[in-house]
Image (cartoon, rainbow over all chains, first blue to last red):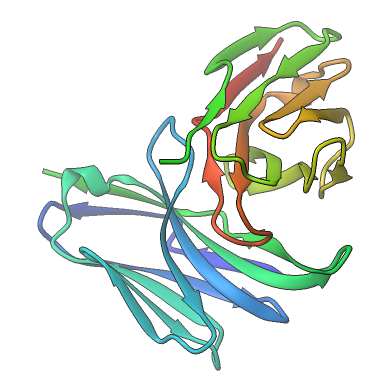
Length: 117
Length: 112
């Protein structure tokens, strides 16, 4: 069964500290993996996309890693800010065939991050 | 910037009412989606559409229907609202299948 599991469920850190969020998946065949950030009361917004051949990708203070062999991804946040308080959702895309090849998205349940002053 | 607009941020409805949730995107995207988001369950796909007049069931279509009469507009319909449909509803669009989703701000629906 295609699944995406995220840990921890929630996390509290102090402003300025670093943190790492984890995503493990059992999705096959793998197409890509995205991390989304969802602020309270808003829709999710894409932070990064990782394809099979990519190990690391950065977007400002956010760095995502992917280990396709162990089917694990992490999102590292450097020098956290209060505005980083949000839910972070890992989404894995798998291919299926619907009128031609297309993709299905498997969502994790998210990690809720609270950054305190 | 892509903009996905959902008509209501908050809705309160009574059990048995017919409920319409409207979604409009302004980037000429082919693909549109309706998700519901519940604590501990993540986002679950209700219905999606890859073209005008086209609709397909997602993972949890029971109790819902959709309409896509125009490319930019995708409506979610609750024929007879029930309390277990209380949830956050998120509309999304994408240019390519399986690629980046652009979400609206969501509609928090409460069915009493």
